[in-house]
Image 1 (cartoon, helix red, strand yellow):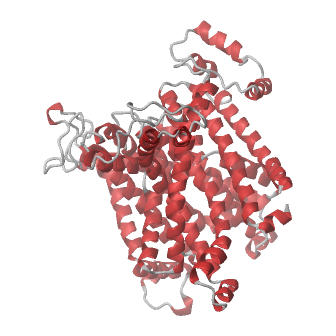
Image 2 (cartoon, rainbow over the protein chains, first blue to last red):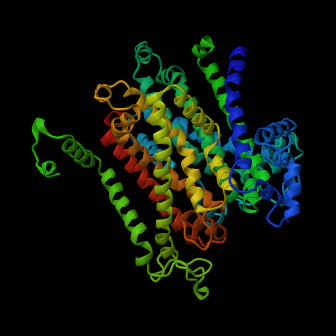
Image 3 (cartoon, chains in turn orange, brown):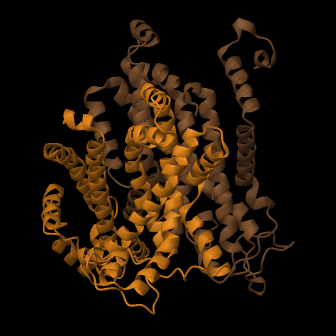
Length: 337
Length: 296
C-alpha cells in the first residue's frame, strides 16, 4: 500500500511543476508590466523601478523563475498591497473556513446523490428515476450564485429559518478556541453546544448550495455505474442464491459500482473549488475565495496568485487522495502498483 | 436539399438526406430537443434584435421609479436606479451570447486544431499538446479562469480568452482521440497515395471528418461558457457596470435579496439558467443525431 502511495506521489510531481510554472507565467511573462502590478496603481516611476529590482524583474526569465521557486520553498507568496499582510498568513488563517464549507458541501451532495443514483438504477423509469434525471440535468444548468441567493431569499427573508448570510458565526457568538480551525469540530471539542448550533446554522445554506451544485455528476455517474453492475452475472448469481435485495444491492453491486463514482469525484472537486469562490461571495464567507475576490477588485495581484497556487496544489493533492482511495476500494489496482 | 424533401429515398438516400431523416426522427421522438431548438432561436433573436425591441432604454435610470416590483409597465420590476429589469435582461442576451460564441469558436480553433495535430502526427506534437492539456487540467477550472483574467486584465475580451483556455483540454483530448483512430483509415491512405502532403490530409480529410463530433462538443460547452462568464462577472471581473450582463445583474441584485427586493437578481438569474439549460439540452439532442451510440 505504501509503495502505491509513493508511486502516486511521483505521478503528481509533474502536475505540481506544471502548476508552479503556470502561476509564475501568469505574473511575469504576460503583457503589461508586473512591477507596475505589484507596486499598485498609484505608484510613481521610481517606486515601480524599486519594486522591479526588489522582485528581481530586471533579471532574465529563468533566473526570475529560480528565485520564484526559492521563495515558494520558503513559503513566501509575497505581500498583499491592501492589508500589508503576508499572503501566506492570510491564506492559512482563512483556509479552514473554506475547507469546512467545501467538505460539508461535498458531504451533503454525496449524501443525496448516491442514494438517489442507487434508487434510480434499482427502479429504472420509476418516479425516482425521473427525479434523478431532472435533477442531474437541472443541476448542471444552475448558476451556483443564483441558487445561493434564492435559498437566502426563501430561508432567510421569507421563512426566517436561516440566519443572515453574513459569515461563519453570528456576531453574538465568539469563535470556539481554535484546534482544527473548523468551527463545528472546535465547538464540539470545547463542548459548546450553543456555538456548535450557531456555526451549523450559518453553514447550512452555503453547504446546501454547494451540494446542489455538485450533486449532478455524482448522481448521474452512480446511476449509470449501478445500472451496468446490476446487469452483470455476479449480481444475477447473488440474487439466484437467495440473498436479500439489500445485500445484493449494497454489498455486492454498490461496492463495485463505486469505482467510477470515485473517479468522478476528481471532476467534482474541480467544480466545487471554483463554485466555492462564488458561494463565499454570496454568503460573505471569510474564506480564501472571498479573500481572492476582494484582492481582484483592488487589483492586488499577490493574493490572487497565492490563491490560484493554493487551490491548484490542493486540487492536485485531492486527486492524489482519490487515487489512493481508489486503491483502497479496488484491490486489483493495488496489485498492479 | 430538394432530394432531402422527398419522402421515400430507399437505399439511395444521400448522407445529408439520411441525417435529416434521422434528425426528424430524433426530434419527433424527443420533443425536448425541438423545444430547446425553439428556445435557441429565441435567444439568437434576442441577441440580434434585443436592444432595438425592448420597451425601455436598458441604461436609462429613473430614480423616481427605483426598486418597484414587477408590474404591467415593468414586467420584471425596476432596479435600485429605476432601470427596467426586463429591458436589461433582454439587452444582456447579446453580450452573453457573444462571449459564449466567441470563446467556443476560439477554443475550437486552439484546442481542436492542436488536438487533431496531436492525434494525427503523434510524437512530439502529441507530447507537447498532451502536456499542456494536463497542466491546465491540474487547476480547478474556474480558479484558473480567475487567475488568467486577473493577469491579462479585466476586460470582456480576456474573459473570452480565459474561458477558451480552461476548455482547451476537453477539445484537445476529443480531437486527439478522433484524429488518432482515423490516422490510418482507408480514405487517409488513399489521399496519401494520390500525393497529398500530411498537413493537407490533416486539413482536408481528417478535420472535416471529426467536425460533427466537435460541433456537438461546442454546443455542449456553450452552456458552460455562459455560466463561466456570468460567474466571473458576478465576482466583478470582465463586464463593468452599467453594462447589462446576466452575471453582473445578479450581483447587483444580490444585496437587495436580503431585504426582499427579489426581482432584481431573480430574473437575470432565471434567464441565465434557462439559456444554459437550453444549450445543454440542445447539445444532448445534437449528440443523439450525430453520435447515436452515446445516447443516454
